[in-house]
Length: 330
Image 1: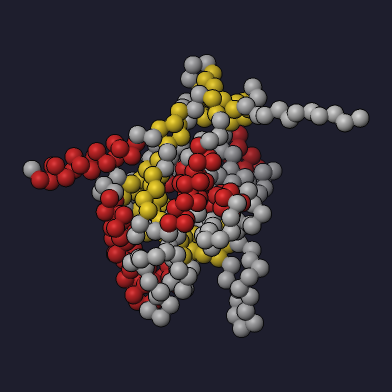
Image 2 (image 1 turned 90 degrees about the vertical axis):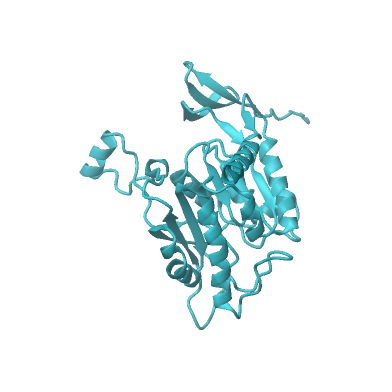
C-alpha cells in the first residue's frame, strides 16, 4: 500500500510572554529566548567597489565593530580594477596598501570601537608592528586553528592556523565575555561547582580557537546556497567563528563593518536573531556581490511571524553623514 503523507511545514513566530519576555516559537513550542530584547532583523548594506573608495561613503565615528579578512598578498585575484594588486613580489607594497585602508577604518570607528584583523602570522606581525600599534590599543592576538588536508609540504610544517589581531580605539570597549562562554572542562571540581552555584555556567575562551573550515558539503557553504561553483569566493570563514567575534565585541543594534565581504558570512551572521546587528559590507568582485545578495535574500525569506524587519537604518546613517558635512561647512 502506498501512503502519500504530506510533510508538515514548520511554522515560526516571535512571541511575547508576560508582557516583557520575547521567545522564538517553532510549531507552538518556545525554542529560543531573547529576554527583554525584541528581536529585529536589520537589512545589511552591501557596498560594491574598491575598499579605498567605498570607505569614504561611510560616516566617521559610526562603526562599533570592524572585521577584516583581506587578501593575503599571495597571488589570488579577488577582483577587477582595484587598489589591491599582486603583491607576491612586493611585500612592502602590500603592507602600505593595508595601511591605507586601516587608517580609513580607524576614522570610521566610534571612540570605543573594536577592530579584528585576520591573516597569516607573518602578515599579522608586520601589520601589528608597522601599523596597528601606532594607531590603536592592542588587546590580544588570537590563534585560529583548523584541520587541513591541503598545502602539505615535504620540506616544512603545514599551515593550519591564522592569527586574528584584536585592537580597540578606546579603553571602554565592548567585551561581552558572558555571551561567548565555553563549558567548564571539570564541572565536578569544588571551585567550579561554587562558581556554577553562583550562576556562572562557563568560562571565557582562551586565545586559541578551534573551528573547522567551512566544508564543501556544509549547508552554509556559498556554493551550496547559490547552486554554483564558478566565480564563487575561494575561501569562506565558518559562521561560528564570526558569531563569537560579533557577540563579544558588539551589542544589539550596533553597526558592524565587514571590510572584505567575500561570501557574505559576516552580513548574514549579523542578521541572526541571537545577534540582531546592523551590517555594512564592502566587496569589489561583482560575482561575489551577486552571490552575497542571494545569500541575504535566502535569510530574509525565512517566514517568521511577528518578526520586525528594519531597512531604514542605513538611510539614518547617511543622514547623519550629511548633517556632519553641514556642520563642517558652518
